[in-house]
Length: 399
Image (cartoon, rainbow, N blue to C red; front, side):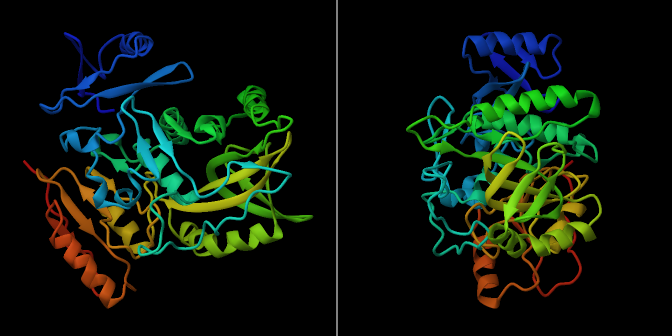
């Protein structure tokens, strides 16, 4: 949240730099009050999430476009990204700000086996991808966007930390449910690890895993882990996945799951290894055991040094060029890598600019469709054509 954001509670006003902010937010949280953002005449409502002992102001789902583009909580219309395809169907928000996700993968198993599902790594086609349910990667995109982690402001500095990633993801998940119940009951995002806190972190994880224990006569819950990929090692029946901030709780994949992982992740791992300061985020469902987890499904998402997702090298180049600017990275959700949606929305130009940077191998028909969508869009477009090698000039900041 930007330091100069101002909010109204009844007749009182406060900002994110107000002394005693946590006390103010705690009081509003207890009363279920909604602070109103003062960035625009529409005064869009916010909600307060509690993560551990900290209270965090969050944008109400579906209200991002009501904020001023210079406001920290602004979000573009859903139609600018893959969110437009699934919003209102796979993602349903109620008046209280809670969000229901409909998923195309199971969060529980019966008789030790989950129902068969599509490979989460297979590229969805914009023509056939169902808007009614989220794939595993689309769920990660939703949580990343709800946490504001696809957004960058020049005031943030050059780096984010895993501490921020963990905190914002957990805050976003606090308002999300599936038909199985609150997603926070299944979701494990490892906190920042330290040797000094080893015992406490292990105890917290055991408490989480206890919630996933099977109950007689009911399906066995699965966990969801979101973490940074570090590597893998061969194991007796497949491989052991090594995740950062989880040195004492390994994740195992059988041979079949390992082969699927290779199909979806091999080129992305190469990209991460060749790109300084980048990371690979994994999201996986897993069967929990006291000492380890057994992965059932897995998807991956490359992110740059600011933890902003990217799909290919040209997009990474664009994000590098925007490192000192204010922008939002548009995410694909269920759509394919070639779907004609914006790559980013530049915010510090007065009127936002929709930025299109398709990969160099985009076909002629796909590029023609993208040009039409760019020309017909809500915001003026900036386009880096596939045949152009050099990055075109970036629009300047408004005065």
